[in-house]
Length: 618
Ligand SMILES: Nc1ncnc2c1ncn2[C@@H]1O[C@H](COP(=O)(O)OP(=O)(O)OP(=O)(O)O)[C@@H](O)[C@H]1O
Ligand SMILES: Nc1ncnc2c1ncn2[C@@H]1O[C@H](COP(=O)(O)OP(=O)(O)OP(=O)(O)O)[C@@H](O)[C@H]1O
Image (cartoon, rainbow, N blue to C red):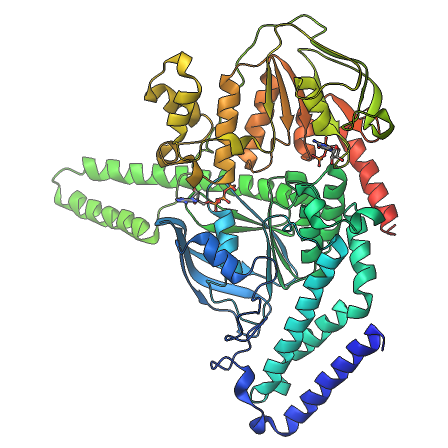
């Protein structure tokens, strides 16, 4: 029997069950409900083999949070609605309130970009939603993607298909549960679930999984590689393929572009811009948010979620306009209050003036009771700054006919005949697909790797400062940031106040300076790495994906610091905006090394065109 007919038969059986349930709804067994007469997506309560949430399941999340997350909120949308509205939502973590008395308002078909400062609680919020710690109706299935697929013996296609099969089983169970309820056959959600089972169509699992993986950059050969033999970047793509294949009602993506190359980012941007359920996306890449989002949700410093219609650029514009208006209203109101207060103060003891003063005071009281217009807080100013450095005369770093192969055999070399010159005023962006050899090129620059052929010349005094995706792993998680910096630079013999000031510039303030580094969010840890890098006074910066985890303000500040830096910079990044701001030379690493004759935006256009042609669009 073919898979298609099997799936059709199943569907027919489900339909027959629906009919039967219609006839004898009262006789149907309640054994498959959870006692509250609500279906349990993904499994029955006593069945501990079932997964409640695809991706990260509730048990995983409960384990991760260590029971230190608390939240409250009241569902106000209709329980059967596909929109989600929760009022008076608050969330605290380790006793600290991250979100305070705000509204969750997700509309079906919308794609929300979740932004907010590093450490504000964005990841914790998504974890709280995925673990259903808020009253999200059970029929809304949730998938949280936070990290790469776990290494296993399954290849990429198998990983996606297993996830999809679990999803079909979950949906079929959901149908059974709905039908088992009184008048279950009338449940308006049934049709949606049937439609989802139909869309998933097990008979085409393999081919559709392959198409999706192809879009994410997998060659036919790579799709059949066990995930345990893949790099983090490729396992991230497997995780993405699983999530996109399942297409949940509520898809939560926490910085999905972090390990992707530019090509995959362009593909993902295109794909997500057509996601027609609910998407919540944490990303610090403005152009990615622009391409994908219909709404922006800002977790602000007052711990509220503030919603804006439109993409990131529209958000910036709207917010600026609102702030100008708010500031005008604030100034006007303050002038009015000052004027009234002046009158009251000068009223003296004349009885008619005293009476007038009293009535004027009532005006102020009324204004205060209604809530005064708040002053717009100035944005938090970061000052990433790489110390000025002595100019070294060229050639500072030169590649002469360089070739490299990990095996030492140029037959399987990554590149050969590479000629490059990097000097104190260079601003170079290295771009190219995952695995093409960008990080390897940086390692050849630092001397961590030696050229297989040709010669790499470094100025005798050259001091390089390198940031890579694993730099934060080198931090001592037990120490506080202040203690860490003090131990890292003992020769400076500086006191606590000095270090407080230094790391304060990188937005590490208050308790974050003295609590263990292990308690900081990823973004705050990354900022500390930059504080350390800046203090080491390099001549040249080699930055491998520096924007992963940094928030918008930090990225802007990093861009400014790179622009003002007096030494050379080589940058690997998937953030087009940062590249556009700082890079003046684009070097493409893709089966060789060549200089791209054009701007980074022209390069993006080429990738977009290629991605659309390959996926059969246009
Ligand atoms: N130590 C190693 N031994 C053997 N092969 C390696 C080693 N390190 C990397 N490679 C391989 O060399 C190739 C280039 O890797 P590299 O990390 O330089 O690529 P990349 O362009 O920086 O990729 P990404 O964008 O994913 O970071 C990849 O195929 C990788 O699997
Ligand atoms: N074990 C812990 N003990 C105390 N506080 C913690 C612990 N783990 C995380 N936190 C704090 O919880 C807060 C929220 O962290 P979360 O990762 O949700 O922030 P985020 O907005 O996603 O940050 P980023 O943009 O840097 O990834 C942070 O201020 C962090 O310092």
